[in-house]
Length: 401
Image (tube, rainbow, N blue to C red; front, side, top):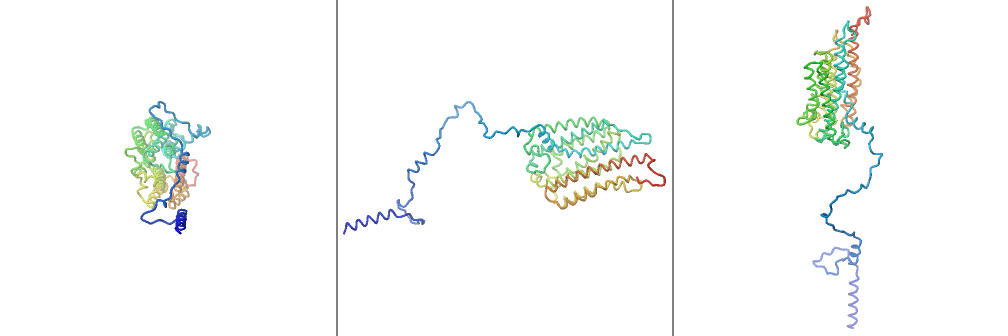
């Protein structure tokens, strides 16, 4: 009987050892060692055989450091050609912005030439060498200002994430910052030299105006007090691309100052300022993140729309004041043909909130400025020759010019 009980007890013990482990959480104060899950030692040894061998070598004995070959070699077809580099620089120089410097120069030169036309001088006096020198000067100054704007925006973190922002030679990693700065200063220096030669024909006042234009081109973006970052961008663009350039071009041709070019320069200056204001409205969010305090960043969207609308509409006021009176140059009112384009710009301005839409509206404003100036120049030329050529006035038919 005892042997049977002993054998039954052993069988019970064996059954207990072979019982499957419970999946329940053990909440006992103490756990028997047999109930703790263990990992066989053989599996750990098999894992250790799969581990890579590590060799330790001293670095003090190394005398020559070599750079390993890159895993991915850049193919030859991805190397930029001369044409690609020219396109990159063309986009970075913002050639479409050259109109801002060329248009006031054309307006002042045309007014200076037309003022010299008389009955004995039907062709007037035009100095092509002076015009060519002044044209090269303003183009180089504008290109230099664009590159400096790109460089200093990069330093201040402006337009780093703005795909619609102008330039971007540095922000996109295309050109090294030092090269952009060097090219910008080179353009400014050569442009200042040519501008000085052209301004000598206009006298001391033209030299002063040229110096102010040069300072405006440089300090528009350059530290320590960038004019565009202290709500003075629109004021600077109005004076530089309006009265200063127009009056300087007039004096280079005539050698003296007159009040007539000042009235026409106001219209052009307001239009160009409106284009720059649209540019600031487009970059409003990125400028605010970079702490660039333009007028567009300080005002709300509705106030920005009002200011830009006043700039656009104000450009037509001087021409209405000149052309409506009975003895005024009525033909300058053909600039009102641009009103449909102006309406499209105003509709886009008041319905647009995204930077991409504002970018399209700004491009329309640039085209409007070019067409406006072209119509104004045609009107001034026709009006002047109509006045000095009475054969165009038929008897009994009153002239409208």
